[in-house]
Amino acid sequence: MTSLRGESSEVFATPEGNLEAREYLRPVRARVKGVWQPVETDLVRAADGSVTPKVATVDLAFSGGGDTPLVRMRKAGRELALSWPEKLPVPETDGPRATYRNVLPNVDLRMEAQEDGFTQLLVVKSAEAAANEKLSELRLKLAADGMEVRETSGGGLEAVDEGAKGAVFEAPRPMMWDSSSERSGGGDREGISPVGAWGGTLRCREQGGGGADGVGEAGSGGCDASVRGR
Figure (cartoon, one colour):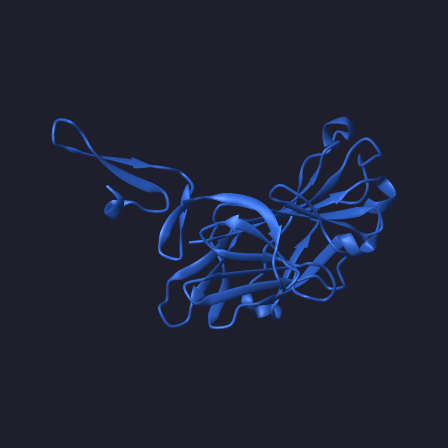
């Protein structure tokens, strides 16, 4: 029954005359120009040079390089934008992924489109790269006009519409990690989420021991974060 269909749900009429609802954990379709279409997160280049998913439940765009915002996401008439502190290279795209090579020496920035948002991953490819002091605290400029960005009880973020008072976007707590931590005997390294009082920046920093321990040429580490529409 198309009239009862949603982004992550659908309703069927059974032969017995009953209605059967099916719910999905993540969106499986999005309404495009009034018509339901299956979600397709592979990236394509837009006319303005940005890269966007073919079909998603949010209006999402990754930077095509230069000084444009790293990511812009629009939903319910509101826009959330994150900007990298320096100019970005032109991304390499592969399916839903856009990779910005060497945003720091031997550090790649990998963005991935999802059904209802995106993930962000910094891939640190060597111990020398992990020793870069810029990795000890990463700050991305955050723009969220018309929304209040605040920390949740779980350490994540939510952007709340100042008028409607509902959450438009949400993000779990970002994580710092080291793929070779088991070899080095260390544990995972965590990041912390921002609150509005931090002057419109999103930061992810190491806690505890940190440093380059255990990150070698055969391993990698990074900061893993995600944002999605509510």
